[in-house]
Length: 149
Image 1 (cartoon, rainbow, N blue to C red):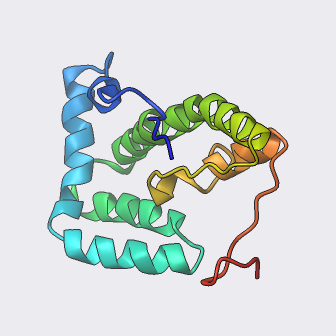
Image 2: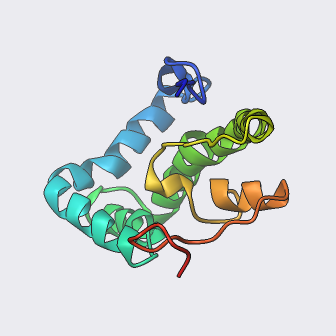
């Protein structure tokens, strides 16, 4: 099966272009509390994913930053919003055209498309699943055997 990237390899290096040095420092400060609990975050994310509540881990990070980053709630909310826009929402939207194009090409050959990306790209109004629904795709969950529940 051909493998094609949804975005250029260096995208993550350009996500925060245009930010001021102060915004960059505040974003790092808001994210640092999570580093002390990386194993806990990973376990919580796995459990949240399989219970259909993956966005809870994002909100947990916000609460953790409120308590442990040293930033004001307003600054944390600003940084969380900025991170969501740059790391997820903008990227999700840019992935839809390549995904639709791949699906169209695969359909002509009665083939399939497999897309792989982080779980936090799935939920929400600007998540990949909702964006694909807006393009006319039917999205449904699969059970552990690959069958729709």
